[in-house]
Length: 187
Image 1 (tube, helix red, strand yellow):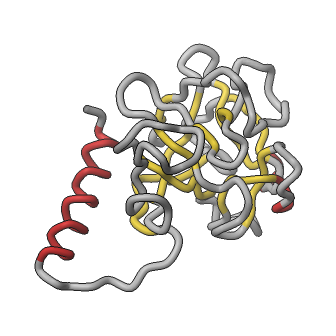
Image 2 (image 1 turned 180 degrees about the vertical axis):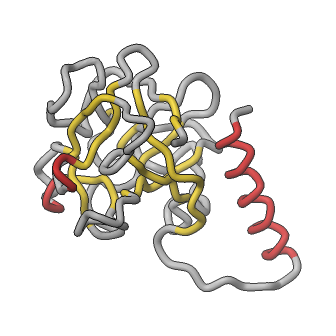
Image 3 (image 1 turned 120 degrees about the vertical axis):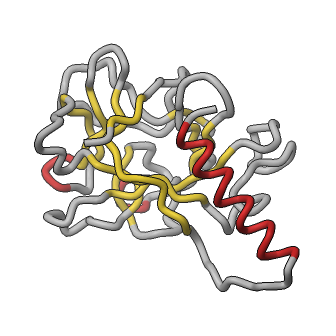
């Protein structure tokens, strides 16, 4: 079990305990940031990047000392399916229960898009290009399958985020057929 899965499991356990004891939390959309990190290909060290601060998501080479535009945090999408976890019927097209559903948030205080989430560029439901939007925008929910490497399956496009094997500066898409493994690189 990865450190990310353990952190998300701990959050899920706390939510369950609060529910059992009758304590109610008022939440909408996303909650519970998991740490800020760069998400990069294990082979090329190309990372998801808010190009020039956003809104486009492109790829750029891993930079350990200055991660601006490359740092993202994962948040459990508590308002989706089973409190942010899949069921066999939710989201449509996935079919496996108990996988995490997350939103991916930019953490770059120098960007006017700081705090925005990866989803359909310009919040266009017909555009599979990855871009930054406010919470709840089209294409902002991603399933992370249990086990194996970390991949982000987009619930709107029913495809995978990214193609980090490409040279830097290429637009990332939410409808890739093949999964793209990415590693968490914490600065």
